[in-house]
Length: 92
Image (cartoon, rainbow, N blue to C red):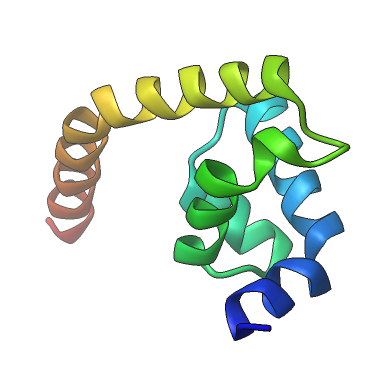
């Protein structure tokens, strides 16, 4: 058994809860990973490879999750600009 599968199985409940947290709060993968103490990249792999097939997941939740992640991706450049603006306004 590969180490990837053992990590997924060990933290399965946390991954499912993080996915549901993203759907409910419309937050980013980065924020959900931080809240649940998970790796951002491992959460990303779980979402795209395992979540549609998990008993607590399902196709409907997966579609909602992907819709939210697509939205986050589309406004990424705006969030970055606002963060930079805030950083420089605070330094004045």
